[in-house]
Length: 245
Image (cartoon, rainbow, N blue to C red; front, side, top):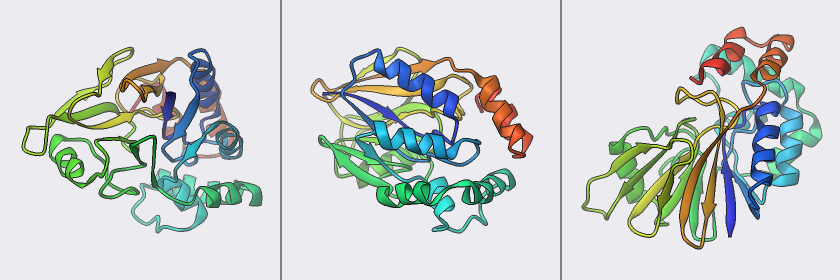
């Protein structure tokens, strides 16, 4: 089966629409969403509606849980906390019901582990180095797991439990053969990349091969940034979209 894995949309509708258009050009059969539909951006309802209509699998991220009021936002940065409170006010009852129906930050599909953050801590842990990756490879049940949360397109791999873990950024168009070894693969962020590349990110996954290919998509950043400013959200949330960090 050909699958698109997407993550960390963060209420950026122009980015989501551009990624979905790119996905539709590839013959993908299912879309798996790894969490954080909302937060930071200014179009949470529209993004939730698209996720509900297009994704076969969806997870909750920490910003989604914050919008539901299910986690403490005292550890959020000021901009993230401001956005979380704004999002709570803007979401409709239907929007909140869609988030509640998702209900969890981890799952599995076709033998692949799916986690918003990490196998060890599906809500909060940022897997950004090989030491953390090795600990999570030990913790995961499946040989291959997909993760989000860090907004960085990358992957971690090791041959086996006693082998060294390696880390590689997922450059545009690069493919990885997943037939051997243990893997943690992050598709990157649709709505707020933080790997220095402002283009929206998604991952094409051939579950039968298995093989994964990283994609990046141009989208109208000006439209996303302007919607943030018009909503009265902190301006740096708009400015960072141009930098990809």
